[in-house]
Image 1 (cartoon, rainbow, N blue to C red):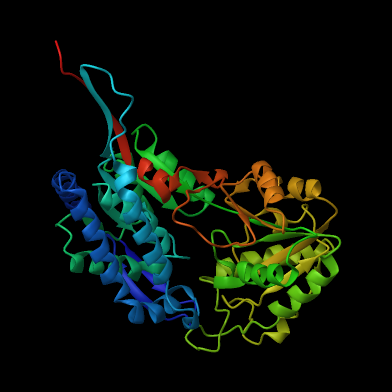
Image 2: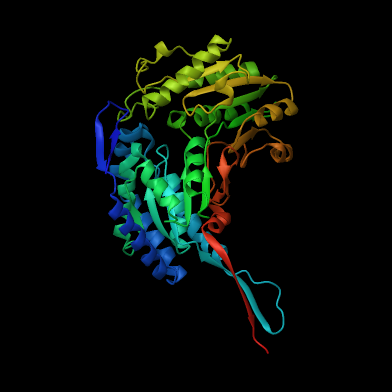
Length: 461
C-alpha cells in the first residue's frame, strides 16, 4: 500500500494524507459492488431517482464546510462559493430525463409479437474524477449511473482527495445500499489493474490526453466501455456584429474564472478587425482588475493554480510566445502575489500571437489568453479548427442563423452563441479529436451507462 498526499497550493500545508486501498480491500469493494448492483437493477426507477435526490440534498447540506475545503485543496476563491448550484441543476435534470431516457423502445406493432428494446444497466461503473471541478465532473456520471441501475466505484484525484470522502458521506446519509457506491483511494497502478482485470464494465475518465491513452491501454482487450473527456483549447470568435460590452465581459470571465483551470474555459480569442482595437483595450482593462491572492480571503478574485508545475507550464508558454514576438499587456509586478516557483500566477493577455506559438495551440489550462485579429468568418473558422482538440467553441454575434451555419463547420463537441464556459445538462457533453470520446449528461448520457437488450416475443404459434 502507498499513500496519497494532498498539498495545498495556498501555502504548501499538508491538507490530507490517505493510504491507498489494499488489494484485498479493492477485491471486496468490487465484489460488494457486483452484489449490490444485482439487487439495485431490480429496484423501481422511482426509488432510484429518490435516492439520487436524497444524495443531492445530503451533498448540498455540506456546502459551508466544502467551500473552504476546496480552496485549500485546489485554490478556488471562497467568494465564489462551492459547485453545488450547478450540481443541483445537473442532478435534477438527469432525474427529469430518466423516465424517457430509460423507457423501452417500442417499434411499430406487428401482429402476434411483442417487441421492444430495453435499456439494461452496464453493471459496475468506475468514475475517475479530476481536481478542477471535483464535484461537478464526478456528478455527471455518478448520478445517472445510479439512476440507471448501476453500482459506482469512485477514484478521485489526489489534489482533491477529500471530495471523494464527501461523496461517500452524502451517499451513506442518503441510505445507499451497502456496496452500491464506494469511494476508493487508488494509485494509478491500482486503477490500471482494475481495468485490465475486467473488474468494471464502464469507465469514465476526465483528465489529460495522455491519461486517456493510459486508460484505453489498461482496458484494451477487456471490452470495458470507455468515456473520455480530455484536453481542450477552446476558441471564441467575436464577429463585427457582436454585442461588444457583453462579449468582452463574458470572455474575460470565461478565460480567467478558476484561474483558467476550466475544461471549457476560453484559451484563444479571434476578433473581427472592426472591433479588435477596442476589444483588446477593454479586455485588458477588465483583466487588470483581478485580485490575485489567498483564496480564503473574500477580497481575492483569482487564486493560485492547483500546483506549481501547472503554473510553470503557463509561464513557459508565455515566455516562448514573448520570445517569438508576442506582446504582453499586463505587468506581473502589478499583482504582488505573483511569484516564480509558486502556484500564484498573474493573469496575462497576449497579442501579436499566431499558431506557431504553443500558447495558441497547446492546452494552457491557466490564466493566459491570446487574442488574434481576423478579417472574416472564413479566417476565424480556419483558425478555430486548427487544433488537435474539440470540446467547445463560442461565437459572439447578433445573427443566430449565421452562428448556426458557422457552428456546423466548427470541429467541436459543443457550439455556443453569446455564452461560454457553461455546461447545459440537457445537452450532451462530448468532444471530438483528442478531446475524447463518448458523451455524458442529456438523454445520450444514459445511453453510455446502459446497454440495449432486445425482446422478440412470439405470442401466437
